Length: 495
Image 1 (tube, rainbow, N blue to C red):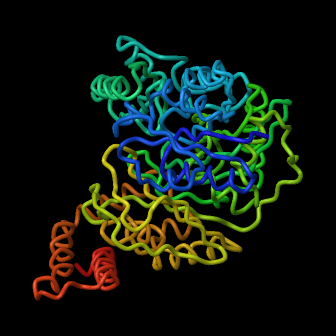
Image 2 (image 1 turned 120 degrees about the vertical axis):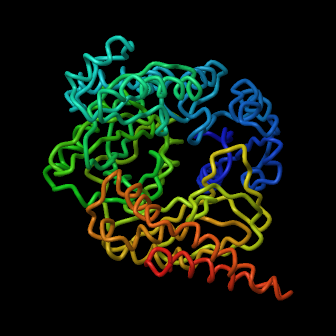
């Protein structure tokens, strides 16, 4: 096992990795930009190295600087977290070339599965079903002919994309070429590549992913599935396990397909095979593979009792997986909510400094975050601040536990999306597990069409400022209660 690991990331995932390293007696090295000099992961690590300016391109995306920091501090391995360089084949290769261990798959595997076109072909070769689509990337001149073969509605997708970027839905032939042009521009700006391909759009689909693990000894296992269908702009907001929409028969086929693909490509370390489940819950299709630890990995840990970061470290150190498939059990249900600095009424990003923090606690509650009193939301990075994870004996209990946890979560100084998550938990589609990837957008569109957002926003502003106008600053608890009251009135139609 390693004695010192550098974490090439920041925020809650850096803190998460450090906690497991501390448990195993492994020394940690944090890296930080100008903006993160006082960040929690810097305080938690045994050592910290400054790597550049606040912009990610000048710090967290500088592979050479990060590797130099690892060599300087005599770290033996680098954990990439997620985002930034976590799915960069060039970075993985550079780490290994420097004589360090990359805590993830090889650069060749990252490259193979990061190319969406190549990944589709790999899935087909492994006899895993894929969504009908083009054989590979397309030229604009081929688009209309392919669209006729595939059928509308369809998706234009970036071949080298991820995170929901470079995707456009096309419902009419006249929209096709413009959608392709837009997807190419976004893909080029985001990934440096304008390659796109076409897929049929599976309507009323759910986004279901399987947590897989492989080692360097040819072993491959799954740790069951997660339903990640509560999304907005292709970004996940709430995730849960198990997926309540799966029958035992379909679940067994889904899990077996994920393990088969993992084994076929010789995958080592943590990964996620993502699928689309059709509206009837009878057919699933390969979507992509994420060659890293996922944001939502804690819900898998809650129901299996496994530490996925520890398994990552052990696999990267060359150890065989310490558990077999028949030893992995799934007990109860778990839900994760991502906490963003976002106005739940106007759905716009917010900024500010955490003036008062009270995180929920309890036997079945976990918070993965990097917040503290005085924490300032930075405009340079992805805006997720924390994750609330709960477990219950069953799905209904887990939902109630999440509602209770969120009611206890106080982050003063910032407006957050907590009221929006609470609305999701109370909605009939979510409670009945009859939701799909378009559910949240439809829910929000229904609210927006009522014309109440501006009224509600003004009402919130008036109520929050009421005491201040009378020269009596309101208490933090009173402000928190008033904000929730106004948003709840909005969601219930009282405004």
